[in-house]
Length: 289
Ligand SMILES: Cc1cc2nc3c(=O)[nH]c(=O)nc-3n(C[C@H](O)[C@H](O)[C@H](O)COP(=O)(O)OP(=O)(O)OC[C@H]3O[C@@H](n4cnc5c(N)ncnc54)[C@H](O)[C@@H]3O)c2cc1C
Image 1 (cartoon, rainbow, N blue to C red):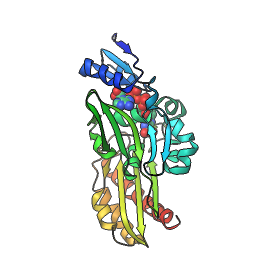
Image 2: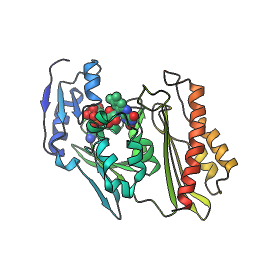
Image 3: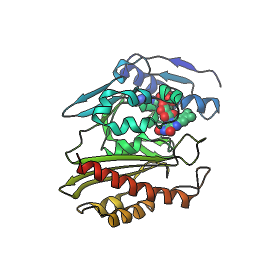
Image 4: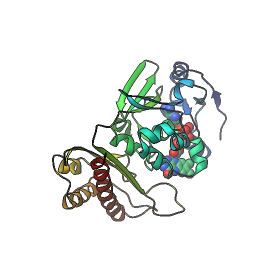
């Protein structure tokens, strides 16, 4: 690793100012689980690291009946996994976190870093998108809010400007008669990142689907909504046959590549099976909510 300046701002405004000053030569540093590896491999060679860990505004998990659940960017995977508030309001996140990496990474890695890395083989973004989550972002010229879906542009590429910081992710309360399910599949016990991860959220009107979110992760450069599958089931009662058709459609709406986690064809087959299972589970949860 080459030498770099290590900066420790204590407010978001100060951090954004430092990022603006250093431009492309600076990198935000949160838990360091991703940044440290890339620096050791020589893929990141920043002249300045802006450590945001001392910024209190980025910490904590809160709930507001109107706004929903707000998770600060510095909240770690482990904090989400063990939070009684998250377990009460969005238990799907606690369950998903239990499968992320290992306890060492879960203790280090933050939710802001997980999203801002733009790494395709991750779990949480699919769930946030299925829940219509939004990101609060602050830069040197002000604040903005975007749907989580709009963060991801390509492999390791996000819509964040160089001087911008994710401050928190906000998940609105689910409408009544909603069910959400997340299922990830890992093809090998030695590979701790998922080969595919599918999040499905259904909101029902009587027994018909009023709103559907089918989100596919790890099977393309970014998480993607399977919009054709969503359209197919919207307005209808999801029968076994319809769920099967939706799974088949979704498998065509992603762009997996063949790699050590499986061939393209294998991953499409996994997506098809996971979508069917997740739709069935989400429907059961919505019916019993
Ligand atoms: C061995 C291993 C296994 C893993 N397995 C999984 C898995 O199964 N599922 C999964 O979802 N993830 C997995 N991950 C990814 C892991 O969750 C992320 O690496 C971690 O959450 C990153 O968080 P961090 O705080 O350490 O980020 P950092 O390494 O500090 O930063 C990551 C990137 O985000 C930027 N950044 C950080 N915070 C912010 C912010 N608030 N605003 C703007 N930019 C920011 C940094 O500049 C950097 O580019 C794994 C990682 C490892 C190393």
